Image (cartoon, rainbow, N blue to C red; front, side):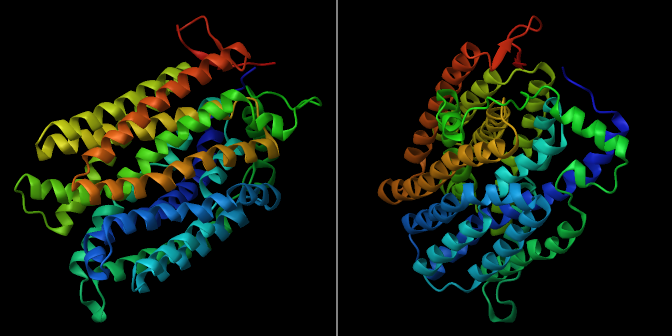
Length: 446
């Protein structure tokens, strides 16, 4: 039976936990994608081809993949406050070192180290939210925590530094940008180690009654821990979880590749359509898809939380992303291209939130921590592969169209995976149709 968290306690928890997680995620994505803005000038200065750049962007995930599950196991043991802060500080220092690379091989090496440092952050955030919020609120809290401020604010800011700080102290603007933005998460670490609380049981800013209410609401609607809980290996090999993981991989293929290449795609479209764009203008135009995506996916996920339906929301999001790519490659107009990128972004940020809600059904504790890391590993593989492939196709064909069409097919395949996973979950009574509204799904209470 679902228990509602009192509004006053809910607001108290949100004010304390969400801003820190949101800043962590924003810093992480800023340090992950600012390489795309740096590439506007870095590639030419270092003599890096699109293929090598895509390889550097993708190999970031090698170290990330290797350390993902061990990182979340450690987080479960030592707590989010210590471990997420450690992740943030080490990746910030390594990211700042990117400012000093001299060639493509050094860039690849630093990006791989950055992946090792950042491993576990995103599933760690999801696990942290699962310890603080009831199931019906987690989707919206995850949306707020992962709002794409790194693209909306960070991309124009990065572009401005690249353009206006060029030559300052004798350094290229892209080097100054990477160094400054790498130090920001280190500074944030001093705040998070003091104010982030790992779980309600440790919150000295809640009364005993408030702790009890948070824990009761958090655990309501989740499958109760049972003595007959299946072994971890059995859980990870469940067909519906594998299908959801594959769907998440297709989403991340498109999402990460679009984030990395959007500044260069916008710059390319400017040339194709005869529009002269400065670095700052490219940064501002590249942020538009994320602004649009943020608005759409807030309402999308809020509606999913309100109705309890996840499967069809995720499927529709994947189809929206594919439609955006269709507009992007078929309508020869700068504004239509921005609209296509906007639909692509909206779809690829909305679908995964619903997938995360489905993967969390029926798992708790250490099992939940490992399951979140496991699913994210599939996304990492997709993210690792797609930038290199798109860069390779761009070098071979002289256009981004072939790579974008590949991402459209991947998005449609993701919709198929979600549909099949939903059918299996219904048969296993992990989710079940509700009487009203039609098509709504609720966690099984077995």
